[in-house]
Length: 111
Length: 116
Image 1 (cartoon, chains in turn green, purple):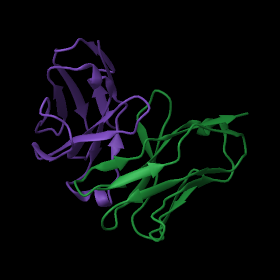
Image 2: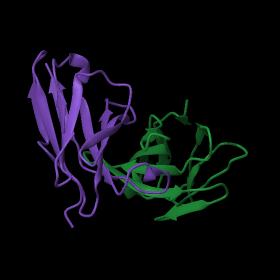
Image 3: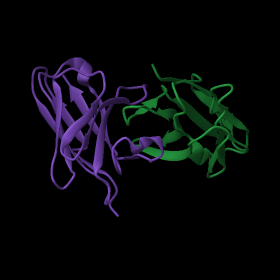
Image 4: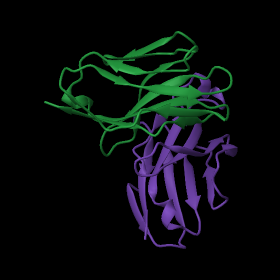
């Protein structure tokens, strides 16, 4: 069945460092792909999405490119800030109309 | 726009009891999905409601049931609570059924359920 695998955390970076969080997926067809962010004590917020191969989603300095050939959707940011500390979830749109999430990667950014 | 709202924020129950969680979707949305997020895990899909009917269901037992009202709000009911039901329950709303290939789901803040 469809599934998402993302890198284990936690990830600890210094402010202004480069961020990569790896995400790979297994799916039939060509699902939409998403990155959601969860700040402490809050629900999930959509960070970015891509609906077809080679699409690049971007928002707030974060980017991810839908790579069909490698079944990947890695999240990147060139310069992280303390305020980016959160848990990041990679997800794909399931055939049931649901979202299938990875286990999440906790990011901590130190000043 | 109030966004997706959920109540209560926190809830403590004992094993064997029943619980009802509530969700109001974002204005203009007609589809409500429920997810269970165990501590340190990603959300798991429970079921989805559209036009007051359960349209899709994840791998959850029949103890988990729901309802959608004509105003699109929804309830999640869990019977015979187990310790393992302790989790954050998230409600998400969207527009249309099966449209999640392209449509974004908006999540509420969740209800934290603790079963003792």
